[in-house]
Amino acid sequence: MKLGLINSAWAQAGRETAWGIAQTRNIGFDCIDIFADPLDISIQERRLIALECQKQGLPIVSICCVATGLIDLNPSVQQFHVDRCEAYLDLCYEYQADNLLLVLGEYIWNREVIPPDEQWKWAVDNCRVLGAYAEQLGVKIALELEPFPLSLLNNVENMVRFLNDVDHPAVNANIDISHLQLADVAPKELQRLKGRAIHVHISDCDGNVHGDLPPGRGVVNFLPYLEEIATMDIEGAISLELEYSPEPDKIVEWVTEAYQETDRLLQQVGLRD
Image 1: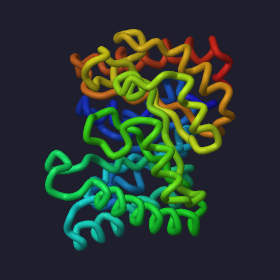
Image 2: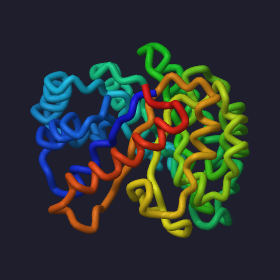
Image 3: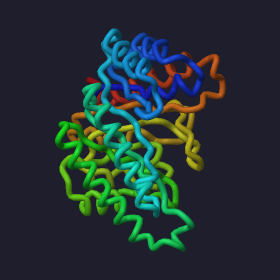
């Protein structure tokens, strides 16, 4: 598999887009994931991302999208976010990305006011619409498993159930290793996603709180998860997700450390191309 980086690592440290893309290549990554909202970025920024990635020889594999409004109780808000996600899918097509990494979010009001089944159905219906749109573009959707108690997709059981309910070949799963650790998901459970997982995120955590640390800085035992992933024949990339370096002025060292340790782990299980 290819090893990529989500470019938000640079943005969180206040570094400009072109500089971050160049550093991604200099450190040794094979590809890149882009965190950019097509409704927020200027046309100049939109074009800059494509040109700089092409210049550095970094294929864009995934574009990250948080769309909690897909499960909002207001139909108008849901429709806005369907339209917004379609704009993201257009951007995936424009950048020749493999997938849209989609975060659905959490049940609201502690699951007490709106029946949870209603929010689940909204998510299923809207993802089925987005799956059909993605299929027209030749793009796929990778749903992220979030480790929080009220997240819709907070374990493998719920991910499988959701994919079954959506029942669309363009709607698939993302595997995030630190999220699995935080959700207390055993590595062997990943086999339930074989043939349905198309993208992987990797980072570390302290075992209690979402952290997105460089591998080796937390408590995650990566090898059992990576060994399972190695048997799943995933054609996509493994992308490092790093957020909020404690020393933003040393972000290059932070990302380089994460790259080197991740590369070592992937080589150990035969996952690095």
